[in-house]
Length: 471
Image (cartoon, rainbow, N blue to C red; front, side, top):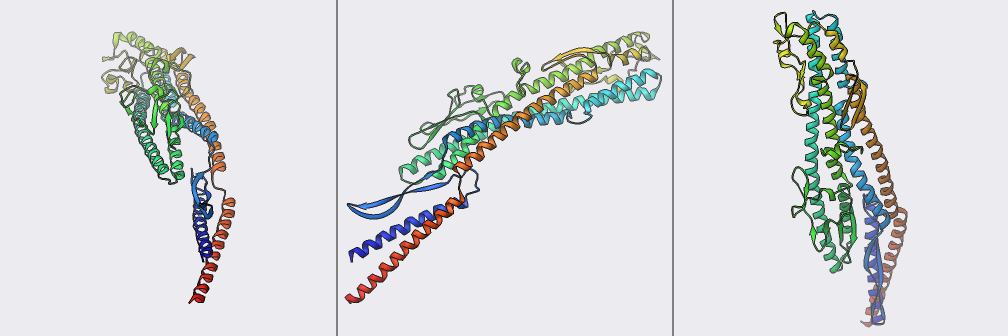
């Protein structure tokens, strides 16, 4: 009787083990296309009661990993985060400047304004040409105003994006810390942690999008994350750092400025984009000091039109026109005006007196003014050096400069995105679910289950027969 009971017990443990293995395999198959899911396997060990064999059981679960590929993917994720953010902002700059158009608005308006002066110089007594000149000048001013306004809006957007990034970073670090604690608790109680580790990996990749990180494994199954400079991000025994953005820089929970420690990912790209420091404005690195350079170059254009060659010629013509009056009407020495130092493109406009009609346009020396718009000069601003160019050529140089920057960043982003995709796919192939393998395992486990079930059925029949004989 004891031998039959022992056989029954062994077969029962076999059924239980096979059931768990079937469930594990089914879970692998159902998650074969789940991003970040790694193939899970079980460690089957024998059970012994003294010197007697007591069957089999699952003593633990493991997941398929590749540490080297994982680190490569983390690094690629950081680079992709940096260039992806830059690409997004530079595409907005392209849209603001209309630089991808065959006939960008800024160049077109400058060309129309220059042409209007030529037409007016030929017919200075024509009211139609006067009105056309004012209209085209006003259109040019509005175009520059619009660009400047959108640049300011983009600056605000980037600041808001930084605040959002910091908030998301804090939440992600907290989630990693929570999983760290769950893994430690599960390990202590003998529960499996492989799914928790999968989830934590995805959170680590998310942190890597924001900044470059180093990963340290802890003996209790937890991990610690640090910046390359050694700034703690999260550690099981210590907890997760909490950062804040004050509108200028990032502070840690102790109030220390840690902006320079958060490098390599989208956060650095965001700060670099709106950096107005002298070093950023003079940097040749694509994507650094973009807002500062854009404002400086627009200001250079505005300065040229309000106090440069054109304005000087315009003022001289006014001075020569009956001592500042003409046909009983006051003549103003400035066609365009702007305020600020350096001149703010957002304030650039046609002289308010000219718009209101209280100040007239000169009718003498008008050809000198028209010629000043096509004469060449040298212009220099942050990120721009234009030699012997007209105003139209200056606008083209500004647009071309930022278009080249955008193209460079887009190319770099494409490169790192391809690299990240390669590591993602390679890691998935190495650690993900192989359907053929899992189906083969499923057949094996089902056969084991069926064999154990057959043993139980046979033992049950034998026990029933013995009970009948005894009775």
